[in-house]
View: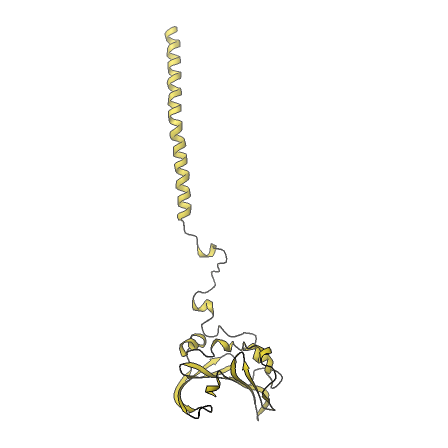
Length: 220
């Protein structure tokens, strides 16, 4: 009987030792699995659409920045921010307005100097009509916007409205330097030398038909 009792005690002691040896291994395995799971979670890339502020339908690069044709236009008015092209290079203008529909090179006599200067003229299409831009000294110095006859802008009632829609500060315009039944001229609006607003006289005198911006007095 004593031998049986000793045997039972020995078995119990051995069983206890085995349990104590295996428990640390089990804990180690559990910790290892936890660490691996955290590493996998860190390495898994987050889709752009899941990032804060991401929009899967929004473009990137030039399109998102509004530099492709039509991006600078105001859909409500058909007009555009003229300050984005005034004084800019031909490449910068084309990045905003797109490829010109026609181009020509020539020379013209400047009123300010009475000398001939070479120029390049590019014509572009916009929602409200066409833009003719003369480049001299490598920059856009004369910009003429020809507004289509169907556009809802009247002369002289809407000249300030159009000025604001073109991105110019109306408050800086002040009183026109010259104004009559067919045109109004403003000097140094936002630092630009001359801004002219003209009607379609004589065939359509009540309609605002043309806007001309000259950046510097040298290029008048």
